Structure formats: structure tokens, C-alpha cells
Image 1: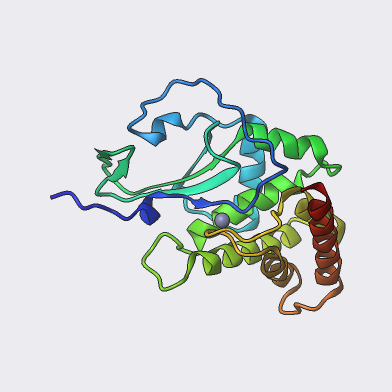
Image 2: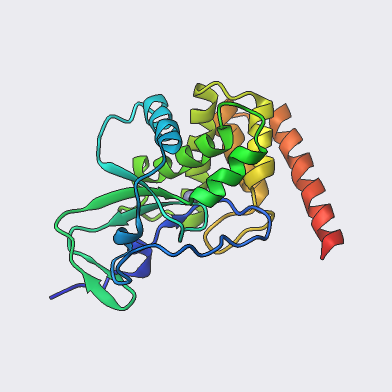
Length: 230
Ligand SMILES: [Zn+2]
């Protein structure tokens, strides 16, 4: 008897970031509408290199996460497909074993590269680290943690990995400016909580540090601008 998994198991933990209000254009690509895994394509060499840097910094040695690109994910996602199979578009999809993925949207990543000044592509590295965090911190396993708690944990993990990779406070600010949405959503916490989490990862347990104040200030300015634009 097939089990109906709640959408939660299947869904990716939607990654934190939205950028601007421009939706990703749909791109025609071959794929079976009943199996999202067929929409996942080989990543670019550039993205693969960044992903490997994140794995190395996190000392993640298991080779159990498949890294792919997909035009249909909003920015980047972590996926877990259970060994029993999963529901997708109203049909049961068999899986032979559990599968873990991190998938990025190449259009979104191109935007990040376009706007970043750093040759180290910290915004992309930060996002990939966040997604790795969901797997490393076992967020797809049974847990009393709420989706928001998981997102904050992944943010903290990302902050720590970026620090390890040599990100300066300015790199963290640039990453923040590019990526953070201004308001909480059902799956993602409000930005001030995310700022505290990323600073905790970056600087240890000092929520009230200079970086925190700097990012809160940027966040406030974003909100003021948005109020004007709406
Ligand atoms: Zn996330």
C-alpha cells in the first residue's frame, strides 16, 4: 500500500531568497510532468565549482547529494525523495532508494553573478551553503522543529560556512542586499530573525554585533523604499 506523504516531505525547503519582483521566465525543456527529477539538468561548470567549494568548506564528505540545475525552481532548493516513492502532480512516482538533491535556477544564479563585485561569488556560495545546511542538519527527517526554525538553522550554517570561506562583512552585506526578502512567508522567517541567524553563524553567539546592526539598517532602508514604491 502506498503511503501518502504529506507535501512537506516532498517539497523542497524553499530557499530563502527572492530577488526583486521579476519572475523567472519559463524555459521549455524536456521532462516528464509526473517526475520532477527529470527536469533536473546537469549543472554548469561554474556552479559545480562553487558547490564543491561549499562541500569542502563544510567538510561534507558523503557523496549522497546530487547537484543539478532546473529552470522551474524559484532560486535554489533542497529536495529529499523518500525510498518508498513520492506524489507529484497527482501521480505516485516510484523511487528505488532515498535521493537527496540541491537544485539551483541558472537564471537566478546569473543575476547574482551579474550584481556581485566579488570574484568569489559569495551570494551563490551563501545560497548553496544554506541548501547544504538543510541536508546536513537533517531537516527532512522527522523533527519537532518548525519550518521557520529550520530556515534559521540553515541561515546560521550558511553564515558560518561563508566566514570559513573568507567572506568579509562587506561580502555578507552584499549577499544580504541581493537576496533577502523583506517579509516572512509561511516557509521563511522575517528578515530580522534571519539577519540574527546569519550573524550568529558568522560571528558566533553575539547577536548584537556591528554586522547585525549594519544589516538591520539596510533592511530598514529596504522597507522604507518598498513603502514608497507600493
Ligand atoms: Zn531554506
